[in-house]
Image (cartoon, rainbow, N blue to C red; front, side, top):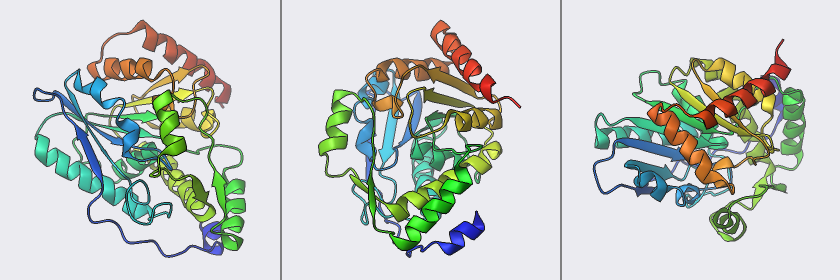
Length: 295
C-alpha cells in the first residue's frame, strides 16, 4: 500500500475548519443518552434530521456535524486528510462529553462515518464511550480487489486527479431522495483523488478495528453495492462482543432507506439491551452470510 500511495499524485490537504457546522436535537427532559452521528461520504449532517425527533421522543439527544471536506465546510469535495477527519471527531467528542458529564455517549456512523469512528477510537482507548453503532461502515478487509483496486485508483489519481464519478444510492426514503438529488450541500460529483484518499482511510479503519474495545452494533443490508459483505464479516470478527444484523435486500444507506424506522427500533433495543426476536433473527441471517467466508 505504501508503494502505491507514493506513486500517486496527492494534492496538499486543505486547512481544517476551525468551527465545524454542528446541529443538535435535544429532548425536553434531561437526556438519558447522547448520540454523536457521523454522516456518509458526500453527505452532511442533515442526513440525521429525519431521525432526530424519533430519538428525542425516547429521551436521547443527537448531535451531528459536517465532517471536514463535506457539507457546509470550506473546500467541499476535497479530502481534508485522515488526521483532519479524526481531529474533527476528537474535538466534537471532547466538547459534548464536557457538556453532558457522565451521560452515556454513543457514536453512530454511516459508511464513511463508521470508518471515522473506527479509525479514531483505535487511537483513543481512554474515551468513555458506551457503544458504537456502525451502519454499513466503510471497511475493506479481505475483499478480493482491495490492493489491485488501490493500484488502479492510484493511477487514475496520478493522471486525472480532478476527474469525477457519480455515486448511486439505491432506493431511499422520500426525504433522503430529495436531499441527495437537490440539496446543494451534497457532493454530487466525486473527485477521483478524494475517492482514492477515502479508500486509504477505509483501509486504516479496517486494519485498526481490532484495537476498538467498546460494544458495537453493526448493521448491513444485502442490497449494499458499496461495501462487501466479507469486509463486514471480518469487522464483526475483529470487534470483541459485537452484534451484526443482516437485513435482506436493504440498501447501503440503511438509515436513509424506506425502512429506517425499523432499524432505529433495532438500535434502540440494542442500546437498552432489550431482548428482541427480530434482532435474534437478523443475527441468524448474519451468521449464515458470514459462514460463507469461514476459513
